[in-house]
Image (cartoon, rainbow, N blue to C red; front, side):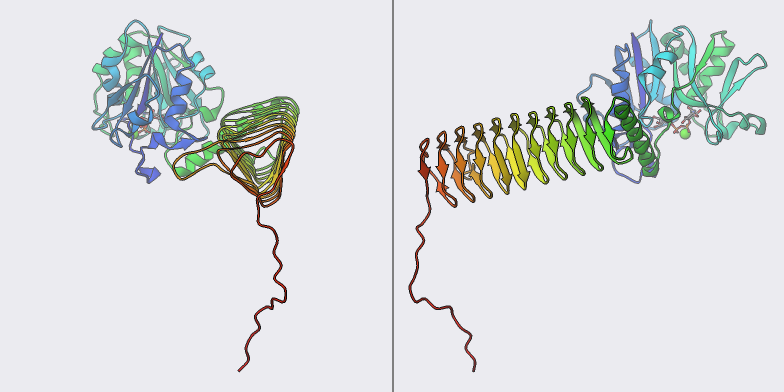
Length: 452
Ligand code: UD1
Ligand code: CA
């Protein structure tokens, strides 16, 4: 049981954007959602998001989460922000304060911070250059006595390198009492959350400190430059994770994982690929350079050649896809299917061993096994109002540059002559040709230029 308070009211002036800072995306997802998704991995029963700028944009962007959204207006400091959430906090448990612009905090670090349920727990960090941060002040016995903000610190206090990350947890009933006693008589005229430390000390409440597993977990974002820095760090971590599981990356600095990538054994990924949403790559899958794969499953032994785009599709085993293939939502390919350059497949099932190697559109279709779809063939699925299906039987062979005008059925083992426009059922096992006979006009002459 735990209350989680996420501070997200800051304006983010240095982002130079009309979008609230915490809604800017890292790895394809708003920063605030990263924090929320991490909080959901703790044993928390109550979530409060304190928001300020951007009207209702923050609550709207967080619609899929069960949380209290508390408006802080005006913004009078971190202590004032947590005060706004206080009425929503459940007593009898701890409260944890997180920040919407510190997106990469990890569950393991927070679990350490939450170990002492009756202490005030501070997440601190030792920094070579602590400028700008609140300093952790300790007595001769190394007990924490207070946090002093940079602007209020003496020269001696400024030399302290242990800083406050801002993330803390405390028993909720004590936190509420301390918040009610905050004053703003400091250099910035703000209600400092950090002042609760001296209050705890004066009441004999133990103040514990712990450190994050990685420094990047507590890095905040105030500008697009910092957002890009954190994005690179996070991508580097993701690349490391999959390499440690056995994936071969042509260059770990040139892969972007914006979601969850699950890989089997002996997977190889070339440079410049983007993985979005949840993507599964089976054993021995190879992904060629500059491919974009979103919310899809690719089964074992399939090779994807460069510049392929795959979205919400299922690709079976031992397929050959690309280069320059486009699989749109609802493409379901069975084993050993070949999809070549400039072929688009949408909402279609293609059975084992079938091929569409060049310049085709296969939409709203059911294609049997061992079908060959010739270059330039189009399923004309749209009459301007409705979408219609095309059915192609096992073993059919469609010549080059055909138009299959749906709804239409091509029988098993049927052959369609090149250049045909098929508007009626083509019977199984037969050759159907639907094109004008060649006509030769005897004695026809090309026009010649007239010279004056
Ligand atoms: C705060 C800490 C400081 C710590 C630093 C770490 C205080 C008084 N100081 O500094 O010890 O080293 O964080 O980065 O807590 N926010 C609100 N409403 C407000 C003010 C802030 O929601 O009224 C949010 C901001 O959006 C931001 C976070 O709180 O996410 C921290 O605010 P910021 O002003 O960046 O921190 P400092 O006060 O400089
Ligand atoms: Ca401030």
